[in-house]
Length: 264
Image 1: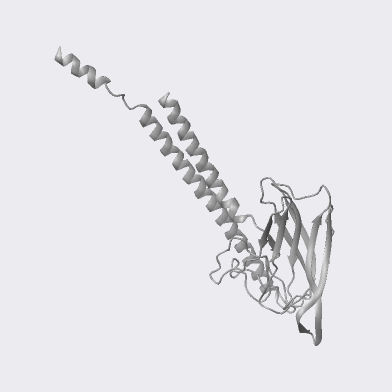
Image 2: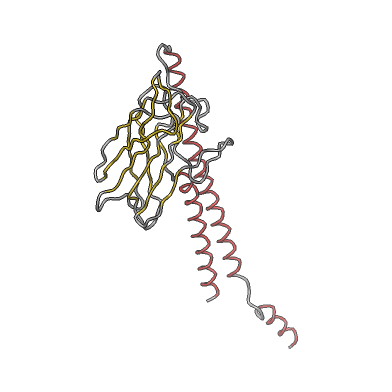
């Protein structure tokens, strides 16, 4: 009975360790973000918001993106998503903005996707929402706070800017970098190659992009490898402990019998 109890306890601990080691990298990577993460000032960029469903028992039924009002886009259009209705709302800006010599007082301020009856992003799924926005303002970066509403009424606000340290907050806001360099790209081809750039510049940017992608993949692979290695080490330690406990002699066993024989 004792051996069975010890084995069950060891199995429970081992299972919990496995879940923790696998859940950690998944939790760190599952959040709303925008692709590509960088655009050239003055361009019209196609922006894709990747929205994973993080709830275990509710579906995502609404997704809202707040567009900038201090450095506004003058034009926003959307790509239709089957099963979802989309609305681009235009509103008054807090203050007039001068864009190419013109005074702009209104601009697109939000984009809202609402699931039709029976549609949702179910647990374990993700959905991509695409817009075309421009002209991209000549600025450092643009926060695009987003709000994810679930079928149970809960709302997750992805609206936290990255701190100066570059450490990712719990609910980071999707960010479009323009003149600033994304914190996780370093020297990669974060800036678009302008007109008149020579072929060597293109090649250098391409090489940098490949290197950055390889480094990122390697880091992810290393993280998973360390997690699996730690899990395997823990499993071996547990097995050794269980074996040692189950083979320990019971009280009054061999030592008691030897002592009794000596007395007789």
